[in-house]
Image (cartoon, rainbow, N blue to C red):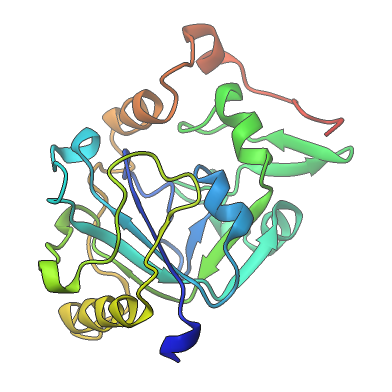
Length: 225
């Protein structure tokens, strides 16, 4: 119902199929966006848009990369056990990288996140899952002004909520129509997850403060968290 709808929107600086991960029939947001993963609840909608950093799209020109309806919110422990197909060894851009260990987490070797992202990722040890999602990837779609939800031009750690619920519903209906009611992975990520440039791009945009030594340091960190 429109009265209960809640839509969070944010701008993405990286789209490699890692965060979110639209593979294996379920879209997952298991890393990055700790603010959204912490507060979002089952039944909420989350939309990711392009940005100038990602592909040069400026303010007001952001295009929709994906829209998800959160069908489930689980902890890292559950995710690790229930979705082995999303681990790095089984998926080129696997986001199931936090293995429960001694009351904390061990970060599994992967080409996207290192020790520099460990603290932020595990500060909100939750994974958002969506069975209903529309992932356009590099074929991100232009959203006409009359359908656009609220999008902050600055950082939005918890996402920008569209307070006009009717507008949020109009946007969601438009996306479904634009997708011709096809659900799932409609397009491919902006950067091929199998390419060498993939990890370099993600590392550059997700870890601006990360030093070279950090990128080499993989982890049995946070065991006492």
